[in-house]
Image (cartoon, rainbow, N blue to C red; front, side, top):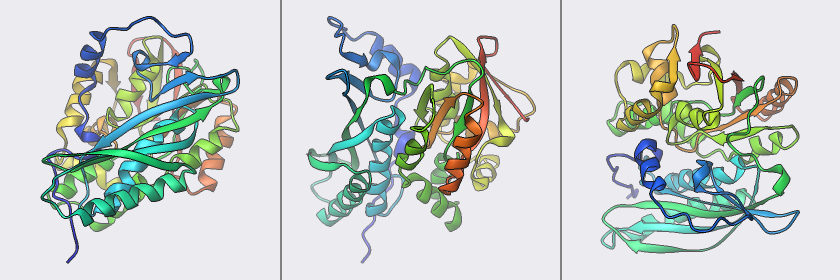
Length: 343
């Protein structure tokens, strides 16, 4: 008999704490003496920590795990690992090692755990890394992910807030996987929609990142639990603004259909509550608004680079079969911070 995982109330990156609540907690933590070798820490709201070891090498550290959003254990393992590995690529790094993080009920068949970890291991190998161990605890529900270490040259780090006025924004994956998985959880998603979402969530950002390395990327993030607009707000960092072109967004068409049927997530509403005050929509349908706030599990890279280089990077990404698009441009600081229009 085929083994399946029981859905939780919020799987994948929809299970993340809201950005607003998380920020309030982080602000209260003791900081300690600053370490000059810590190039990027949690206070920067970036995708991973970066610590300088020498003039030529810094290591990148990240950790990500969550409950399942699909029934098949092997597929869940691949998605969770792909998502965790993504933060290394968002910082401009290369994956070196990974450790498993596992929460699993003692009463559940261990073959399920084996399939989850098999999927994760395959993705670490595909990333060029080594799975070096991990930690497990008995828990009421299933959760899985990775702690990942990578390396990057200290002068070639992609901070998320490094964009400059005039830069164009390129998104490398389609939006809407959160809405599709929500529809799937209640039996409303078509097999085609789920297949497309799973293919996207199990595609490593390694290949998009390798394309980016050839260009002068000023800022980069991966689009995950805070949705495109939440992560874009972090990229603007209170210093810049941007215009997004809604009709240029790579989007799963089924996600728009499901949003119109109000198959939405509480996490998307948290994202809207947090980032919505920084966003103005002009002539953009409600369904597209929801997609832009939708929490993405293992979403694509969002990169800012000079306008003269963006078309060639886009061509390179498309040559790999990635559904990338130029989706907006960064401007000088203005009000609203993020303007979303149809181009």
